Amino acid sequence: MDGAVGERGRERVVHATVLVDEREPVEGGADDSHLEVVAATGPVLDVDRRRAGESSLQQLTDGRRVHAAMVVTRRYAGPVRLFRSLIVFKLGFWTGLLGSAALLKRVLPSSGDADSDEVALVAIFEGIELENRAKAFRGGSMFTWFGGIAVDLRNATLAPDARLTLNTLWGGIAIRVPPDWHVESTAKALGGGVAVKPPQVEVPDAPRLQIDGFALLGGIAVGSKSPDAEPATG
Image 1 (spheres, rainbow, N blue to C red):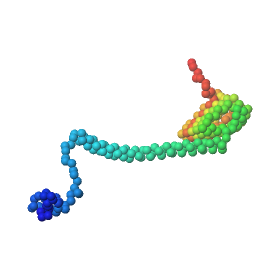
Image 2 (image 1 turned 90 degrees about the horizontal axis):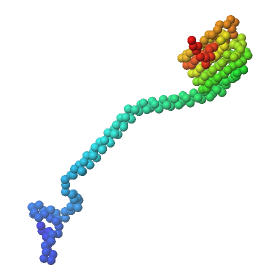
Image 3 (image 1 turned 180 degrees about the vertical axis):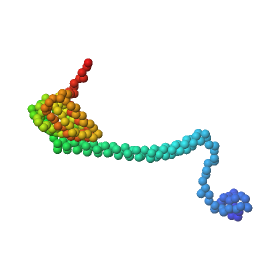
């Protein structure tokens, strides 16, 4: 400890911190500024434990929620994409269909009235009702697409070799004729139906009406019975 202890005003002072034990001397210039003071360990309260547990549980729960959301998203990703594709397809289909309907209405205008001897009726996304009273009805054509045509010929006079061409696509055509007309039909149907009923009364040398055409997912009906006629009761 030479030089470690000095005298100042009859008081001994220590120039630097040293060990009291001479067997373990240290340098007088040692610096302990790198050391940090740490508070003594105390008891952990139950409240702190509970908070710590809740925090851990919350982290675990959040992690599970994220994982569950990912699983659900992956599980329904395919159906959601399919549903969106169907919606887009339907919108495109109906948009194209309406556009085609508007174009057909311009290309195929409807013509014919109550006094016309020949008609060319076209019903696209609409309905047409006509009561014809022609003096020499020669026939004509009728076409429906997502529409309907109802024509009453019971007050019309039929011309020789009269012919009606009826075509319907997702629609319907109904023709009413007098009971003394003779109606022949070669109309065909696919995914629909054609109903041509014979007259109620067979008349010799009766006026003859020829029906031809095609019904695709639609219907054609020709008859002499009134649509509002009531069945006979006995």
